[in-house]
Image 1 (cartoon, rainbow, N blue to C red):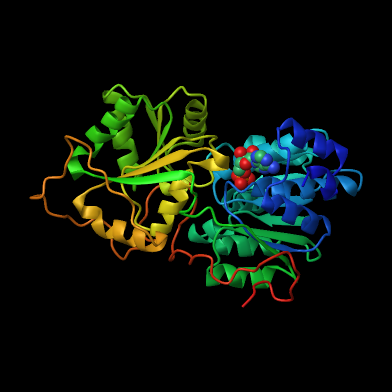
Image 2 (cartoon, rainbow, N blue to C red):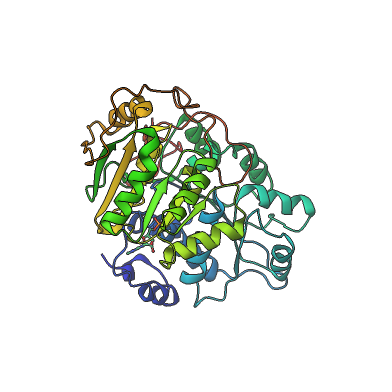
Length: 430
Ligand code: AMP
């Protein structure tokens, strides 16, 4: 299938072809015609599937096909995302795909000055990409009017709920006009998401694309058993020995990310941390430096890394296993993207055996173990408890996107999703 048959304008097709995309991904070929028809959409798709273009392209088409009334430009499309990084990435996609259209877009998120955002909003914006907290700040200050929104997109809705944004989302929904188009994208479908979808969506088209699960046969997974105190040494050994130039490393906590970054720097390996306690400027710079190859290692916490689109990432290392097994799947989804081979390795100490078992249960397979010479674990070392590491799913995790509280248990996986592109009365199939 080619993009030409989907009903998109030549301006949009030109921008798409400049990106080098020759054919739509599965989520795009299903979502684009559905959104162009004007109805609501419930899509099961995660990062890496091409979902951003899946909602952005038809959204641009719809807005450009029916220009707004003259005068001050009201916000006509609102895209909500859970994290600042994702907001920035989606905002970039909107600009890229809309470069030949006379539409204006902007991105607003917390952690940066509000003044320039106010100026942009005052000048008129057709498409607004935002995180919920800062969006409500603008509403409260009277610098944003949402009464003309025609299309609402909730991107990574499951993550938004995980991060405690449900109340904010409800507040935002109350500010929007009734007769609008709603698009909800989520990687997982917990009962909470189903409830949200049922309240929000009217006879939505349902699409689902294969989870980038465990999945990705492009990702080789391995566990390196090692002692707790020797992980950093092993990591430096692997990076140096393999001459890895671009590695994404996950830690459980912000503090752990900072400490590891310092230690790697001491070992002569350039590294930067990305987590919720870092200023937005520092996070943006770290990501840019990493993408440009100025630093070799990006150390991230789970929430901070969510949605990061880093092309062709060859190595992902779990310096510490996540407390929540599903986060393992999200983490290793950072590698082996779009057909590239990737390698995901986990440095596992005796404290983490239960976490590893939980992950293997989720994957329904054992991950191969490989003891690196010189690093075999000392059997006399006893396991120590990990704070919130047992039965603590979803609580006490560190490393947020710096936004609001994140409470509540994690969503379930994939239950009750729809198939195909048919329309149904209820938002969520039984
Ligand atoms: P997303 O799931 O939206 O985060 O997109 C994941 C990656 O796929 C991004 O780097 C996009 O630039 C890329 N992408 C999106 N659509 C296509 C396409 N049709 N062909 C090739 N790459 C694409």
